[in-house]
Image 1 (cartoon, rainbow, N blue to C red):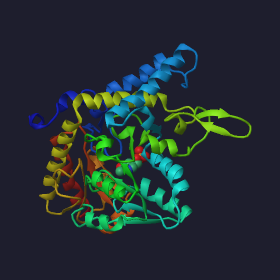
Image 2: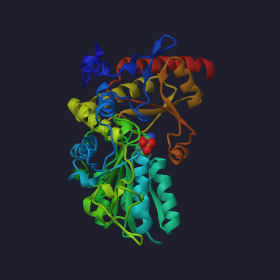
Image 3: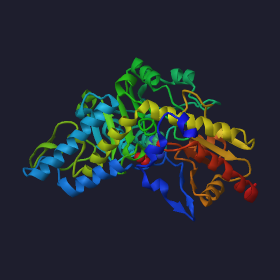
Image 4: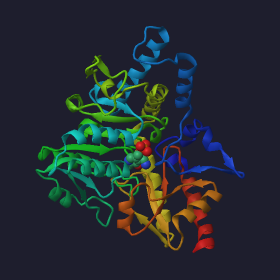
Length: 413
Ligand code: PMP
């Protein structure tokens, strides 16, 4: 079987995802929308359901047994995530709702307080709206300006342009690690180094990186790094903002309330320890348990193998689509700097129509601007179709995607 050539035992992995057995109109679902959200394996679902069945209580170290247990589980999840991304400990791992909230936390907490007129925020043309829109708004409110590192013809960052843009006025460089539209894996360590050479900070949007390849935040050198649980075999409702301890310590909280304070009087309040200072209110406890289980699950397979598997599938999809002749593919050629997704358009067929026809074949992909409207403007298209792969996908599923394109051509082209 062709599966045997792949980096992981896909058959065994698929057994842990009952949802992949689902059928619509007698056809088994082909799930290729993993950049939007990944499916959740049984061990993660079980960990969350065990938590609700056996340990559910509010955290913040209540006196009773259940609260002690819930608090322990919630705190240890921070340790596990810290270990997974190479952070120095739980103090550097703030749990949020998702990548978007992590970016907003940074932009409000650091950006709103630190940016001044004359400061520059350097983004890239392939940023997701989560960072692009957020920095635009914070820049407007602080008088800072926003600059964009160009994307070249091949779908890579123009690093000469980055070197031109990043200078003494740069306050922060905010770059996506892996583009959710082009699939490009960006040289984020190099961008961080450039930022640091000019005493600027670096923020990396790792929403499409942490789920799919080994990531070590200390190796990258990033000051801040964000990702979401639901794109890495974990639950929705939880995300992570990694930050260097001394930077997080110096930052003002972005949300206020219970659980994050040290001392409150009628006049004023002081803040508790990291990371709780940034996690007011009742946090996503079951979700933290699920994220912990997801990290265990991913590491048991191995992040290198997951990356290799996805890159092989993306290469196969790229080659199959390219050989069709009427398919335009965006982003770099398959290689070490391209991750596990392929965005494309079929000549004469709108991406939404294409996706709807694929849905008739129960092939699930996404059409739209993928929250990168300015990048789509630059590509000269309003929308693209995107197939994105995860560790449980197979070559046969790619074949089904490519075969279904014929129907779309017959109907629309
Ligand atoms: N950044 C990138 C690169 C993404 O792909 C996404 C999700 N599409 C986000 C940020 C936002 O993630 P979330 O919706 O989980 O906040």
